[in-house]
Length: 124
Image 1 (cartoon, rainbow, N blue to C red):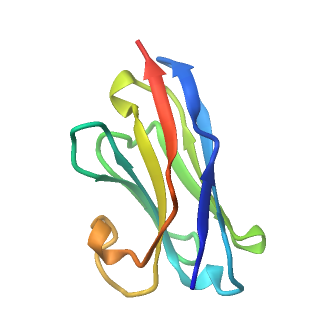
Image 2 (tube, one colour):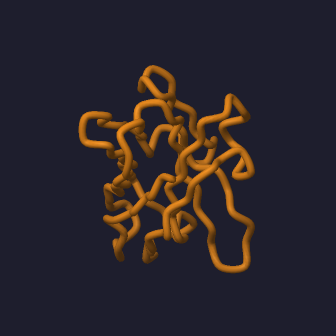
């Protein structure tokens, strides 16, 4: 069993920055692909970013490419999402997720474990 706990959300103005953190339990953190998803009120959960087990490969949704950066520190069992140039449309609950299967990285159904989410609100 893997437990994921997100933190770092909050209220920021458009153009501002936030860094989300996801702390993972277990000693096999480095074997998991990690992803970030978000869900805005009344909308479906959508893929944001993912990072391979080694950190050598990253993937981003087109909507955040160039603004968000995903990274991981396997020694600390933590994955991060640095969010810059935030827009009101980035407002959502952000979820950290982990998967072990070699499945598609941008589909929520591919992930095995999920955090509780952290709220990000961007004012206009």
